[in-house]
Length: 268
Image (cartoon, one colour):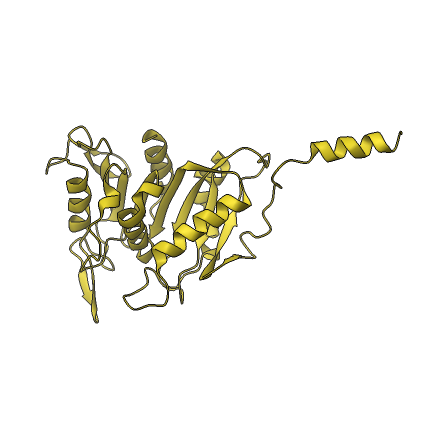
């Protein structure tokens, strides 16, 4: 009996979900069509439902590489978020027309798989990404915004021509972070061989139109890190559309993760 009691207590103490998923930042989580990397917050009890940020890497990057970001750790992991980093097909996002994978469908499969591995707060799943990954975040929001609670793109815009009506943006808080001197993804867009990097202004115009906002911003502020334009009070769909401009070029500016988390949490 003395031996049996500790064994029974140990059995009842096992949580429904293990603290560490069987895959993570180093060993990717394999699903049909590809894989993704996952990092969970330290000290998580294994049972509390977690919000999640899906972050799409830039062109020729990898999901694993995004975990070098100190900002993602400090502002998301350390605040109780799971960080999810899907790998693009051939290290590229978003897949071009005719590619063997639908990246939006693949990302929805990532969310479903994540929900099978951990208790996921499906009401707080957010999308973000850098450069081509930012374009992917826009595309996901356009086509499956009803599965997201918010989207932040850094240095990326919808490709031209835009393949979707972007109905998913209706009621979805979206924010664009962009460098004033960005020549890789200029505000006006640019032609690249046989395709076209879309205009930041066009992406924002689609978002404000889908959210029923007036053409001019409701608020303009100038801060130490960002100059901000906000469409909010006039938006009939009740979701903010924001543009944060920094003085740098094509990159992830200091403070963007803090701004993104504040935006996400203020929208819910």
